[in-house]
Structures are given as C-alpha cells and as structure tokens.
Length: 406
Ligand SMILES: [Mn+2]
Image (tube, rainbow, N blue to C red; front, side, top):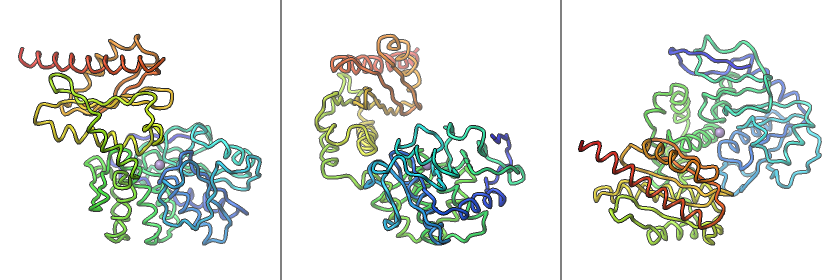
C-alpha cells in the first residue's frame, strides 16, 4: 500500500515499532539470510548490506552479502564480511530468507540473483526508491514526509521510504525503532551510504583532500536528512568524516590513466569563434574512452569537473557554455553547463529543431546544467549532432541577447 500525505508539520519519518519488530522477527527467525544489493552496487547499497550482515552476525544468524559490478569501486569498512559476487553465483541455489537492500525493482537486479528471490521462503526489503515493481501492493511505501502521528499502522516485510535520502538512513530508523544504540562503526557505515547518495543527488558536496562536507540549503531544510546527519556526526570523529569524504570524492581517487585523461581534456577543448562555447567531442570509437570503461562514474565525474572548471576560469572572458559530447552504450550523449542560468530556452529550441532529425532524441535538465542524447547511425551523424547542438546554443544565446537590448 502507498501512504501519501500532504503535511506541512513534518518532523521526521520514523519507523514504527511494530514495523521494525516485524522485520526483525522475520530476520531472526531465519536459518540463513541472503542480503542482495542492486546491480552495479554502490556505496549506499553495500553499506546497507554490511550494516544488516553485522547485525545478523551479532544475533547468531548466518548470512551473506551478494553484490555485483566492480567490487573494487565500493567503499565498505569491513571487508571480512561474508561477501559474494552475484556474477559467480549459482543461479539455482535455494534460499531461506532474502533481504533486498536499496532496490525494489526487477530492473536493478543482477540476473543471477533473481533465482534466489524466486526460491526464497521469505523476501524482505528495505529501500528508498520510488521505482517499485517487485512487490506490487504487498509493501509499505511511504512517499511523503509524515508527521509522527501519521505513520502507518500497517506493517509489511517490504518497507520503502522514498523520502529517505539513502537506504542506510532507513536502516538507521530500523535500529532506532528497536531502541538499539548506534555504535561508531555503524554510524560510519550509515554516513557512508548517506553521503554517497547525497552527493549523487547534488544535495551534498565533498572535498576528499580537506575532508570538508558541504550541505546544500535543500539538505538543511530537509528535517529527516538533517536530523539523521546531526545524530551521526555526534558519533564520528573528524578523521572518520574525512575518510568518508575521501571515499566519496571520486576526483581524489582517480587512477593514473584517469588523471591522464582528465589532463588531456585541455588539449581536446575547442571554442566557437565568438568564444562563448567551449566544447569537447569524444568520438564513438575513441580508444582511450573505451579503455577507461566508457561512460561510468569516474569518466562522467571527470567530464563534469572539466565543464564546471572551464566556466569558472573563463567566465570572466565571456565563456558562457561548456559542453561535452561522448558515447554511452548505444547512445551518443551531451552534457552541458552554463553560467547564464537560462538553459531552458536552449532545451526548448533544441527540441523544436532536432526532435525529428535524430533517432530517440531527448534533452533537458536544470537551468544551469543538463544533458541530452540520440541513438546515432554512425560516427558522421554524431559529428553532425554536435554541430547542430552548438548552432542551437549560439542561436538561442543571440535571441536572448536581442530580447535584452530590445
Ligand atoms: Mn541508495
């Protein structure tokens, strides 16, 4: 069932005691618990799994963590936990209890884990994603911030709070409801998932070198997030916070090849004649791009940093837009930053002009940053696409300028 409420008197979504008790007894009444993370497991999913694994371990319940993707890119404190990669999992293994952490959609499951779910005698879920197609109506899905008095009386083995900023913070609410004190180690894991997802959402910024964590206004105004953050910080040392910031700050953890690629962008950048637009085109068959693993968290962070930096450094000399064109799976993408705060006009113009010219064209985002894509036929079409986009940026810019002077 879905719980919606429009309330302005929100304090923080707590988990109710009956809800926590139901999940807890289902877990403790198990012979073995398989804790499944989502495909391309990230820090939030992995840390959620670790928190639950350690909890079960402490209670004498056998369990293991199943994660997938590039395990070396995940940051978890306790690497001695029982961790298995989904890629090497026996598909037909029977399961006793399955606990899904940080996903509730079949589309986010590594295919080898689906069998476990089907064979399990009990399936539990702790999540914060709105994309929910695994459990149908058989779940509690809290989609809005609720006042304490409005929390649902119903309970379910699948608990999804989409107002939570990370799956680890839903687990925080689980321990809180059970009146379990949070240890420093647990606080570290909860914070790791929290900061990692927060950075992705853009409500937190991290500097791995100084260990600084900057909270956006949006974050501070979110009672649920700021309450959990404040409670976790109390448990952690400045060194802990620095370590977490370092783990999440991708730019501080690049490989030598990635750093070389980042530095090479200065040679690759081109400018339009009027110097308003800086842009980079990475062709579909680019070997370096391929060797770095194509479009992934590292390469997209590098390109993002490049766009922001060049605007910051050259904004005073008239640069208004920075754009990168790059291949991504079967697509050709563009990402754009602008200091004009007026990209909406560009998106609208691009849609009018290019919608029928390109296969699967889409574009959009925020006023200062956004992106688009096509599914191209060949390399030539990619080049044509970047020319069309640049033309569209320049024309839109001229229009806005003439409307100012008019
Ligand atoms: Mn998450």
